[in-house]
Length: 244
Ligand SMILES: Nc1ncnc2c1ncn2[C@@H]1O[C@H](COP(=O)(O)OP(=O)(O)OP(=O)(O)O)[C@@H](O)[C@H]1O
Ligand SMILES: [Mg+2]
Image (cartoon, rainbow, N blue to C red; front, side):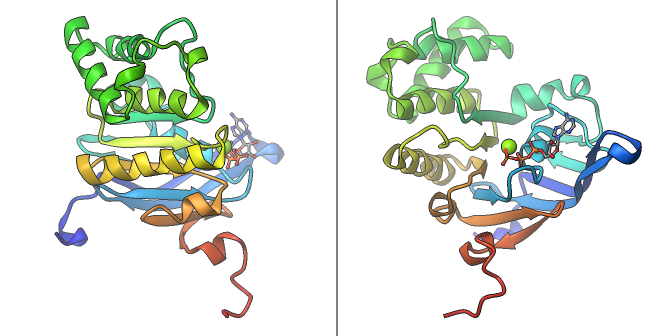
C-alpha cells in the first residue's frame, strides 16, 4: 500500500504557541507542520525546553494553540479550549507518560477498567476491553497485580494497555522510557512497533535517547520552534560535520 494514497491520521498545520505577554513573551512553537500516517511510529527529539511537551499537550487536547489547525480523524481543533475537545481526549488520543500515572491501589486490570469507565464505557464492556488490551501488551498473567508488584517495564505496559483500550487511533508518549532501564525501554519500543504493525495504531513518541529514536519509522527534530525531518546525525547536532 502506498503511503501517499492513505489518509494521514494526524495533520498539524502552521501551529503557533507562546506563553506570557509583553517583554516576557516566549514564542515556543513557531509554525509546526507535521503529518503522521496510520501505522507509523514517529520519534520526536529536540533540546530541553524546545516545546516537545507543549506540542504533545496541544495535539492531546490539553492545551490550546494561539493559531493553526490540527486534524485527527473526524476531529478538527488546535485553538479550541480544552473544554471543547473532550471527545479528542476520550476517543482520539491515548496518553503514555514517563512516570506511568497508574493508581497505586488498583490492580492492573482495574487501572485499565477505571480509565475506560471514566471515558463512558459501561462496566461489563470495559472489563472485556481491558482484558483484551492487557493480553495485547503481554500481561495476561499479571492482571491482578498492583503497581508495586510489577516491574517498571510492566507498569509501563499497564499504562499502554490503558492507552490502547477503547481503540484510539493515536498514542502520544512523552518520554515513555525515561524511567526504564535500557532493555525494558527497548521492549516498550518493540511493543509500540507491534501495535503499529498489527493494529494500525500510530505513535508519536518524545525521547531523548537516539538509540530508541532510531528504532522508529521516522524521526522528527523540534528545534527553534519548527520541526524538521531528521536522521540520527542531525539529531545529535552533527549536520555541519562532514559525512564519513
Ligand atoms: N504554562 C506555561 N507557562 C509559561 N511557560 C511555559 C508553560 N509551559 C511551558 N512553558 C515554557 O515553554 C517552553 C517549552 O516547554 P516544554 O515543556 O514544552 O519543553 P520540552 O521540549 O518538553 O522540554 P523537556 O525536554 O525538558 O521536557 C519552556 O521554555 C517552558 O518553560
Ligand atoms: Mg517535555
